[in-house]
Image 1 (tube, one colour):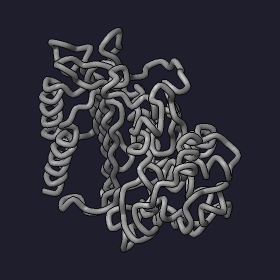
Image 2: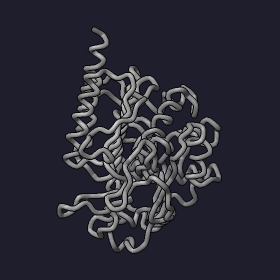
Image 3: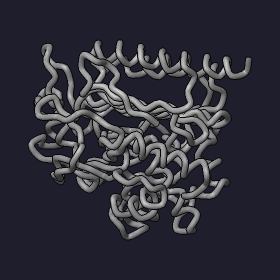
Length: 368
């Protein structure tokens, strides 16, 4: 692979890696990313096929002040894309017979206030648990000068016991609260912190060299080649969690539904490990990728389905504190796309759509 400057006019802000990709697709990618960078995109993009890196692009800086050019090893927060790792950890514990999909949460966590909710309900967003984010927006519930963690959320649920949104198992409603509870179960059953568990049983075996649970305001840590999350406010990019009106820093201690930072290269290692059954069995993986009659488009930690063009995809998005992330994996063709953005660029999904079109055109050319 050869690393090149993408634009002569600003070489430090653009770089890309190309390997064995159709020349027309390469030109489309170059034009696409140049256009979106000029419109405001700041982040990394990645495309692999059958385990081979086909395209890797870095566009912008880690920070708007004193930042360095992004590279393939730059850390980004995943937001809700972290849920796939939480779900995988649960499947590992199920394979060890430590828990079961049918396990009632009241048998696992002390004083859990809602009967009839199982592990499977949590994984597939069928629990009906109230949204902790909405709950904690109420200043009568939480002092925003403090940073809440999972234990704080759990305590508020026990003390106030807000009503369930619906009978567990009867509906699908996306739930960050459910994945927070799954994280607590992982810690309770394994005896490890969430970060320690993932390093030992997920990141390590997957060779995800830089990935970690990072709660930068709750437990400040200085890491090289890390990013900040920005949002454009009154025409200027500002660190999202330094602006009180937009800040979600008071929830920075929560983990399980988010809180994982990673790189585009580590995401490739992750999907390779998942595809090759390094972490769980084929049977468990198929359970993760199979929706039921209630959660028609969601398995365990992944959205599942077809977009009318790619037939058998697993995918997820994330949106947190200025970070906007997307991952898509087509299981039959093994096309894998990751987009990691740290400035709340709202046209990030458009980048994927255009990438997919270029990939499909390249595949059609190969068949001719």
